[in-house]
Length: 410
Image 1: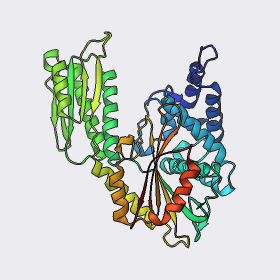
Image 2: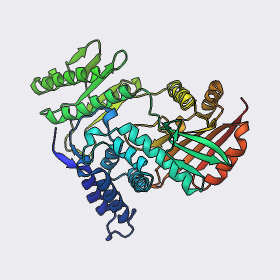
Image 3: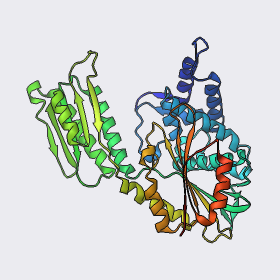
Image 4: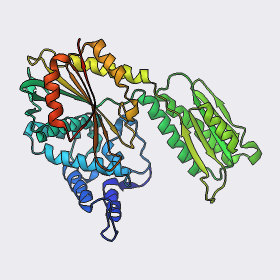
């Protein structure tokens, strides 16, 4: 499992170094690091952030705040953590039932095993939207009930009442990505437990639809490969191949030309080592392919829109505003539009028409590349809600960049 580390404490210690008062121009204020550390420790507890260095978790059990802390030199992650800390402080000023929802999703204090990670992250987006509307002096009811059911919120646009719906859909094919990531991680362990790696390329190709079972099978294949490399003569080390119903693992002698060729062929995983230990050039690496087609993104988005359209359909408040979020961060739980270029607004608009949404849909893509939060907002609404949409745009201008505003007649 590896040694236990406190990622929150290590993040703070690293933050002190990169925000040192002895630097001519510290990039980030030291106060940011202390604020994040104090808030997370206060409301989650130290044990929440103690992990095993070699902890192996499926992607649905990844706690995104821990992933951000682990990227301790990333300005993007530091900025995102600062926003999380501010939202955590803010939500504790809200009515008690909101705080209780946070505590339920967080799980026990100092007990990360009980966290509802995905739901908690969605909850933070709801709080982000509520706080944003409040800051812009848009009348908002915080997490009320409608027909006896909890709502994400209610707001009033130009005097008209809207139910707020918030969602953070993840990329499709998450299981496939999780298997790829975990098999790739197993290669790192392979390197450490192999006495001496020869100049080698290991090619992995999956067969059929990838399921969680694939990981255990390929881990077994890699154990066999490690034993083979530790016992075989150099001339024999290339003679390894496993071909099963789950996929193929084979070895090749390393050369730059062959590596380029294999990368162009698009294999699922390519592990390589040129055997030049101690040289200035990288001696090993991993490439893996994880393509997501546009039609897969749109299919997933369609399912999300359908679900949000019928949610609270029996409410007496007929108007609805749906906020759909995607964050661009270096983490494993990618948002549906992890890269802003993945959003095809024309196709999303066609989905809106196809489903006859007849409400206001607001897509936020949050990026932190500059070390500051930047929000690109895409609005779609029917012509009958044009007045309320314009009112919202006027209120939010300066905080969110409205990349597109589309009005449709259904």
